[in-house]
Length: 314
Image (tube, rainbow, N blue to C red; front, side):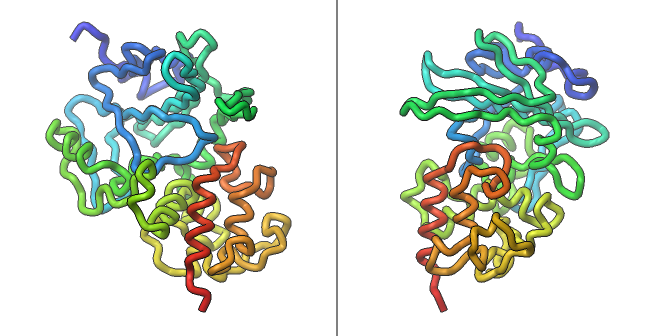
């Protein structure tokens, strides 16, 4: 190959100032990956102010992903997960940031990189940033690039940084099969590709869509060992206890975040449900998720509202 190999040293040590130092892309502006880097997509993606996301994974030569069940894939040391956030399309597409997760011998490191106006380079943004953007419909938003500590706030379980996106249940089976055939994955696990494909939402039941949405957007904090485990909510896909999912569950700590409502989910009445109240807010101290968005996900809220409306009331 004429193109340079991915820089393994940059993944394993230090904090490179420029994204190009890793050599993940042969053309960063067009997001064309290095031949060693593989693009992937998620069935149900995390909402981030409507940004388009381009996701990539890199594995060191001779290593493989391991997966058991439907949960998070196990990545070898030296791996990298790369995610670029962009707005617009075609010639009008604007790259905003690229986040990298680097698997080192002492654990995972999360770093944000901000793209310049010329779209020629992204530089390390440890302090994060606020960027004023205008959607195609004219709505202005204040987009937040998270700082290094905010990255850890979401990508954390029991105090350790971990990936949260590439779970087998949320990955296309054909992609996993391709990775197995290319000897990048030991085997396609049972439970793979079980979450609904959000872009084809009309093909799936409301309950499945809502549960997948909560699993992807909320459960990284709302699970045992997560940053919001003290809430008593466990919003993971596999959870089947109605109370842990929030049904008729009073909040652990009442306050303005409850909006005067008595339970997280009031079956049959989304307007009386704390979950919907907080999802529908952008106010600090009320909005959930509290990081990663400055606007409301109207499609996601509509699905969760419909799910609650359809719940039996007795």
